Length: 135
Image (cartoon, rainbow, N blue to C red; front, top):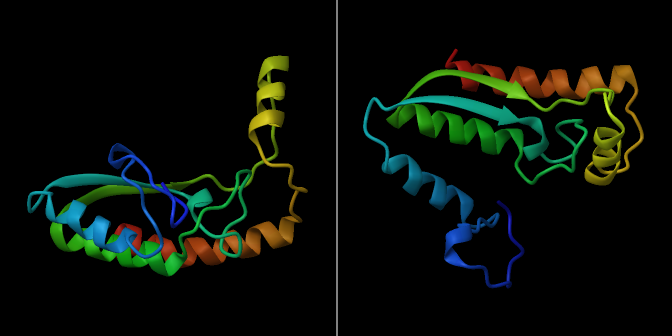
């Protein structure tokens, strides 16, 4: 959803910028009915590279951004469940086409060390899980 500042995008793309996303999120939350039930999925590739190791290009959110969004969401709606997905995994393909598509679609990143992967993503999990589960 991130767009470069200074570039004009069509309104139907609902462009977000680091300066506008919180306001846009608040407007979206306010449009929900009190007690509205929501299931939340957090894909770790939305996080900046220092906060999650994934197979994809990292996004621009921080854990603090997501904790704020989850707490804000819980003020208005009922979060009935959620999950975290998108952590790094060793690519395994069943067909040549999948392998080609994976090569084309995934960034060329070296595989992380096991300790580095566990340490970084565990810290992220420990920060996000309480906000996601409301505990």
